[in-house]
Image 1 (spheres, rainbow, N blue to C red):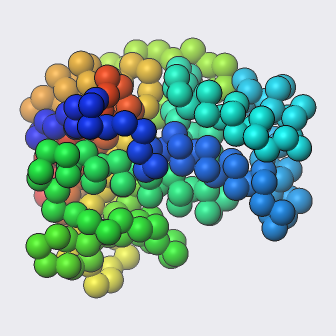
Image 2: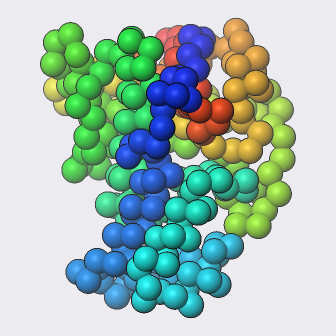
Length: 247
């Protein structure tokens, strides 16, 4: 495991690439864009009904500024029960927006430490990969698949997050790597990266770092070149780890 903890708070600020702000953007686009279909708006409404903000925001669904203020307020202090990308617009556009935001966050943290081999992140228009980037050294393309490390209970709108055991955590990370390892679809890519992210209440740097100590993740198909895990925003940065792969 390569431990990296991201940029200092003084350098971080509020970046447009923050997935929490991407959540706001996705919801704002869905609720304010007159071109969005009625069905999409109904999906939006049903998701808001399952969210603690629903009562207030649904009563004001014609007041765009009010909705935006509510979402900004929610994003500013984070969510304790669900990850900040688990309640976004589930359309293809909303999903891509949040996946790209996590990749941009990783690149920004790598750049802050002066050790970033990637640039030019963008969302893919295809089913695979989720995102793309290019290698700084050669300009070659990098395929990036994005996946969240989260448990079902943590997704419940009023659920009670529970501590993980190390075995549960390692198994969850391994499962997602195995799934992405089997998903490689080829193409003109010089590197295949898997980016895992989590914002669960108990998956913080102080717990995750020792849990990952001496862990190695196995590849059945050997298609993945690089794997990262990035945590939620906390203490002025997003801690992230390069995960050792074998196979």
